[in-house]
Image (cartoon, rainbow, N blue to C red; front, side, top):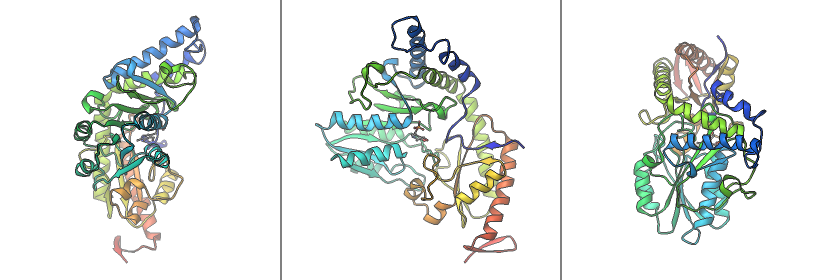
Length: 394
Ligand code: PLP
């Protein structure tokens, strides 16, 4: 069996169609999108098309789309830009405990600048507690930043209820939709947000390019100061091939959404069913119902996630332990801890995230290998006794 990639939440390959659309912008149409001559004009045409492709995909106007160098940059911009622009109204910001580090760390950076930050708790499924949000909202709350879907456990937030509360309080609502775009329908009007972040490499586009939706009429400050690019809101020569790739990738993702979703859900559900049936002492993390179609996250009792990851990698299966964005550290995942997952269980957690190229045969092969891996590691674990195939707590 060829190598199996079950880490699509970390990143996806660039699709052939996207790459094909990008290629001419590296060579023939290499002009600076801001140059006045023919080379520049052919470049800006590609950027304009990409802007309208993004706008169509998320249901906004093209002039509400701003290209950035990543989802991380868009999150930094949304949060810091809003805080700076609205500080005369108030200095209170609300976010949740399960956000991506680009959100949490932007908020803690602002805290050092004199802003006040409330971090909302979540329930066992990883959903923001609406009652807590209600309690936290204040007159001086300028911004609420809550993700649409979580990168580790795939839980989808009750975004409409959140938006309602935020709007009733006259605060600005930012949504990090990096994991959601390309996986579920993302419509800024339906969500009711003012700002929304997306990133191309999560939906078969290139790395190093993202976008921030800024609702017309909302004024936020710049993050990157430079020339007049992105309607003077984000300096830096436009990365035309990447932007063109983002545009094509989001168009393809939206056109393919139903097929993708059905395909991934079938794989995910079979994977979850077999793991729960065939491997003892496992716990599915995240919501069973409000969950991204391509995510399965399990805690395996008594063993370390890293050991599972390395053994699966040896068997040719790529997965992630904790958050892929911050893996490399042996810290238990802040997401699982916030969900109340026991710290020891949190250490034995693995995220499996599926994509278009995965097959049912791969799922079955991976479950078989996973069973062997868990058996092997548990036999070596000092945390329990292994007796005739039965796990017993010690
Ligand atoms: N937000 C979420 C939820 C993510 O999962 C990620 C990346 O994994 C990001 C933001 C950052 O996006 P980027 O990799 O484009 O910086």
